[in-house]
Amino acid sequence: MNGTIRAYEPGDAEGLWHAVRESVPEVFPWLPWAHAEYSMADAMEWVRSRAQLLAERREFAFAIVAPDGRFLGGCGISRINPIHRLGNLGYWVRTSATGRGVASGAVRQLADFAFRNTELVRLEIVCAVGNRRSQRVAERVGAVREGVLRDHLLLHDQAVDAIVYSLTRP
Image 1 (tube, rainbow, N blue to C red):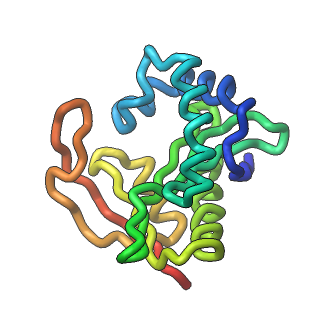
Image 2 (image 1 turned 120 degrees about the vertical axis):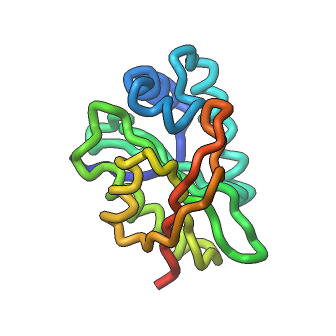
């Protein structure tokens, strides 16, 4: 199953909501915003707020969609540091679309977008040491594992170690 990344559109809120609700058991441990009470209002606000951030180039958030338009997940670049020209690259895929290369494909498209359309020279993928799926995606796209950052992420009020990977401008 291939996916394409594109800017969020107003009509994505319902697909986003369904994807999050379907994926709570798998995603919630790593992305606390994806909780069982995630509402349509939450999804609508997320989609609405992305356009302004994209226009200001402060964050690049994209929907991952199937050829038939089905919402598969999301990816983006956040924590952009314009001085050091780096950003944090993140991704998630709905449970029913995992294991099919959707995340890897989206990360490749996103990195290509970033290096062609921004001044960023470094993208970091930072994931909890327990999040093996995310680590496998980083490794599949050729990101370089640089090390473990101690107590780097706060997940469910608990500091956890994170592995940092990097992709750099070709």
